Image 1 (cartoon, helix red, strand yellow):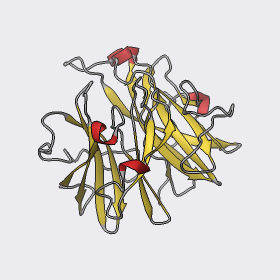
Image 2: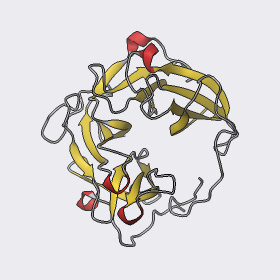
Image 3: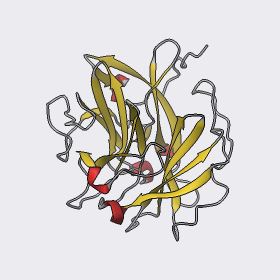
Length: 275
């Protein structure tokens, strides 16, 4: 999809003309697009539901519309020793690239992790360089930096149960990229159940989560995109959850991100402003 204002969207089609061949089966999940030195890089999860060995790959293109040329696997769950290794997110600071990733899992090595990438962004530095920032009841990591804090935004609950989905988003913050990330109660999100509520469902829309990085418009207003489900139309004909794209304003109170009433607004509101 493409948009000039985050509100009106045009469908372009698939980023890949065919699935990469380095994995026997799976779908392309949770894409993360990143621009670097004149090229667009697309980090993606390659997985099936309950995959015993999901993986993260990367492709590149000269345009965000593609076509993307696959560079193959960065790592899989077994090689990196982190279960359910999906949901990539890229962070760049002081010339250093980091890949953050992780998804819901109950295993002893569960969680959201980060790891440095090589300068070309196509491989990791070393498996030994990974570090953990959040527990395995969180996924879909977003990192945002503002006023000296790094913010972790993640999703918790069931993403994909139609009208019964419980997905919601929580936040924590840290003075250091590698953590510890603490919620408003000063509880570390490396322990399950912690995190301050940012966004949850309501009577009309549920399953609100897996957001984008925060985007600032030309009036210095902050916005976030995420997916959600209309409770009256919870599934498509195949039975899969009918997830839609949502956009909401992010405000800041006492250096914490806040979405009004902690839920999406079903009423019309002002659009983002771009010159």
